Length: 304
Figure (tube, helix red, strand yellow):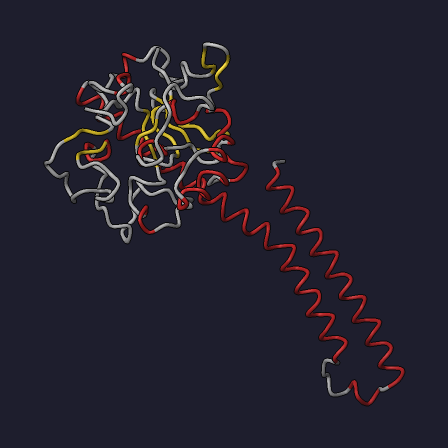
């Protein structure tokens, strides 16, 4: 039996216990009143004491049930998010099958994609993003949500209320870009890879819950090879719930999503290059710098 089932079982047993207490309490009160004021009992009215008992019990039940209901709501959102990741992974996989490579993470062009620019003109680059190459990019208006929106996102700042921010991001080493803001980011620039270019497709990340629409291994390590720039929105990409996010120089509107995470127990949904998806802990995607190497970089983030 899982934690959720145990919580429900405990809650049900508690409710039965409280109901039995109510029954005994009312029985005692009824007997006492029958002995003292038999005539008053004929009117079948609640006394002040009885009402206070009922109110107290209801309040206790609400206090017990609310955490369980809230946890159920969060789990339901995590399941819906996982469904989105599965669909997006399938779309990327089908694109790769039809075009012999995955789509660009970002392609720099002044020609607007269908539906117009999906980001904030003040922060985001103009061009085509990976989802513009798939058939499931419908509208950029959040009023008509698509699978590109994570139901558990915690971005509160209106200037980041765009598809590019706080939803899903593709692995920059797989879906490479036409250019990069970092002068040392050559590994993220070039033609997107094919599935056959990845040595361990079942272990290499393709898409994940992310703070930005493209994300690389630099964003999940405690010591990136190049200092990241807060003023560039791309450099503030993160995996929600990762411990190192507490020390990152993020925008205020990103803090809650980055530090607290989106799903119960700081978990994330992940799609892999071979097409399968998983629900895992954010910490499992962390890359630690040890001496001159980065542990967990390959094959999780790198196709090598």
